[in-house]
Image (cartoon, rainbow, N blue to C red; front, side, top):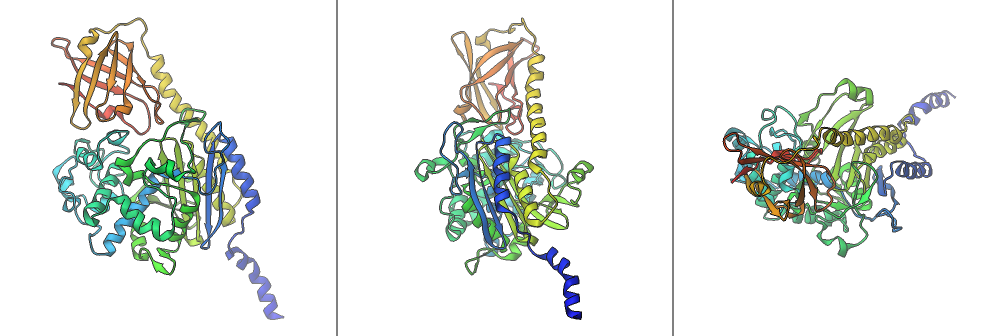
Length: 509
């Protein structure tokens, strides 16, 4: 009787420790309703719990206006979720004694240079992977975006980017340094980063549909179409080629394939009775190397959070005493999110074919259901923020339109504006006279070519020849010198959150 009494006392405590069993049918309904409310054409979800895939399913359609449904094998761009594959690849090379985390990058890439000689000499492989070299967030992305520069050429041009903060004294999310990490993999292993990832991860894990380039999508089949949606309703756009920045964001995968990646991570590198990477390696790339300030706004949104920062290819934070390891991905027309709760042996991935923040909100909602947390409508709360964000983006353009001065004319003839302009960072930018109009030409990125129409004074609006995911509106100003009113330079203004044309400071040749 005494033992029975003790068992009855312990039952509530034991129940709290048992894994939460989510209602998959209710979860399924929630995901589909959220997709519709967010106007996301299609998405795919996978959930791994206690080593097993408990959900892998597609929702919606691959392309708006068509009926072909998304399934668990549909390919999406995972973009910056590629970075975790790069840090794991470096870890394998460290395990094999082929490099060290704190080796100088110049040991493997002699041409590697940043904004000053000391930083160039002392930047380590570890520094490349945690966004602390001193460059600003997304600085230099204009270099690789739709350009024909190779990965090495992009890295070589990084020396012209200014510092945004002191070396190792801040955080600036930089794709360029992961591109450099990909080139380190090439130099050390003799394989390109993508060949290395395929051989060491895709093949052992059976991630048979995953790709490292959009080039083979048609042959592979069953892939989602990207949709531009940063300013409002989704509209289909063509895939962009990210091969020259692939180490920072080039992988395409499916929910089923990514579930295997989650299983590997939650098993601390173990797969099929073998160690793909050592747990000690995961301890390194899951350790916070660059800490973030957790302000009051962040604490209000997540009261159970105590710390937050960037590890190596992963974000790390806590929630309710549990470690949360995560990363997001943003591609032209596709956003994704991966979240892991290692102590609960839980992982979630959401892949979408729209540029909205639904993926992170879905991950949090799904996790709550498995962790037994109180009900919180993450997607409804997030949608309100998404609408405000879209309104802010629209306001950037509206402000510029309101500031336009009507009834002005250029102070110079069109023929005086035409010519070749040069920026050490970016290279040549060419302005051509075509009849009674001007054309903007990027020799290194013809997909960015545009027609120019007069806006006001010596400023012209950029009318892009092709649609672009991150931006629509833009202007270019022709700056004349004071001596003889000869055009001396170009100034870009293309409001967006990633591709910073203002970094191109092209001077007349």
